[in-house]
Image (cartoon, rainbow, N blue to C red):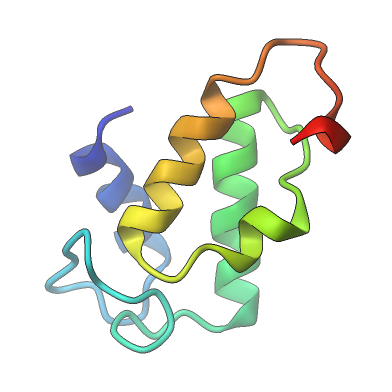
Length: 87
């Protein structure tokens, strides 16, 4: 999935979705609350790894759409069968 498609996923979750840009801040600019962030994390987990859990340290790095997309890209490179604890 490319950045444009990923921004479409975010726009489906965001409260304020009319002008999503890679540098848009998830909470401040797009109005995502903690439940919305959880939904986004779940989407990333499902699309990138088939449901493997995202480590908390990665969740903490998600401030912008670009941050979330880069985490998606990183997780999609995880070898199958690799343990989440190694990331």
